[in-house]
Amino acid sequence: MKQQPRVILFTTPTCSWCRAVKQHLKKHQIRFKEIDVSRDEPAARDMVRRSGQQGVPVTLINNRPIVGFKKNEINRLLDIKEH
Image (cartoon, rainbow, N blue to C red):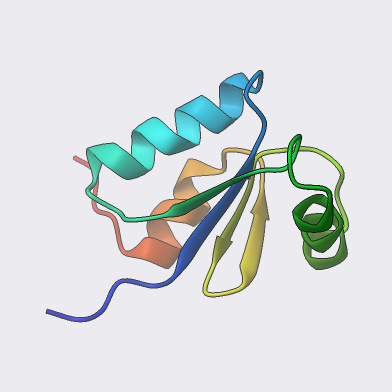
């Protein structure tokens, strides 16, 4: 079994798209580290530096930022097959 890519999810508590990404990752047993940028100012700056965006969710898959819930792109990068 090949190793899963490193997944970091930048979120805020009030973000519905963040919840959608989390549910999608959990449904497919993808492990991820969640960072609440509303409580972590350095992480918020890091997220903006990496993605060029202020908005959440930002999903980093092996350091590649995906802004928003782009299911097809997330699936492609994580090799998730949906039927």
